[in-house]
Image (cartoon, rainbow, N blue to C red; front, side, top):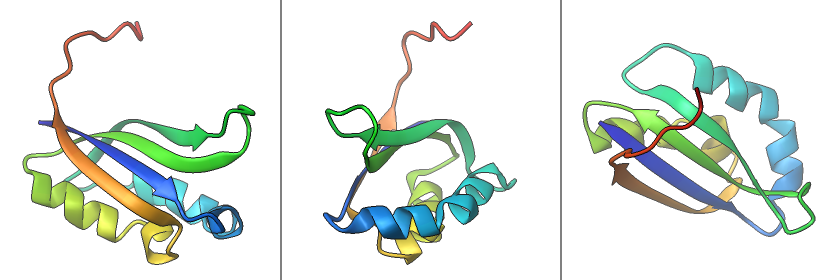
Amino acid sequence: MRFVVHCIDHKDGLPKRLANYDAHKAYLGAPGAVSTVISGPLVADDGETMIGSMFVFEAEKKQDVVDFNANDPFNKANVWAEVRIHPFLMRVDNRA
């Protein structure tokens, strides 16, 4: 099943985000019970300043995604102020 994870950074999260960026990217690419379908930073209206994260993960159950997110370097560094995880039924995929 797929899951959407929507994360909003703390107001002062950008320095922590940048300091942990390489570890975060490596973590997302590691093999395991959760696989990353698509991911990227949420940005402010200026189109550049990173203010959060969005992921679509593939996993057997929501708890796998909850556990995976808890161990993400961004989460461990307290980058995110808010995290929401929801099951997702993909109806359209135009990424061909």
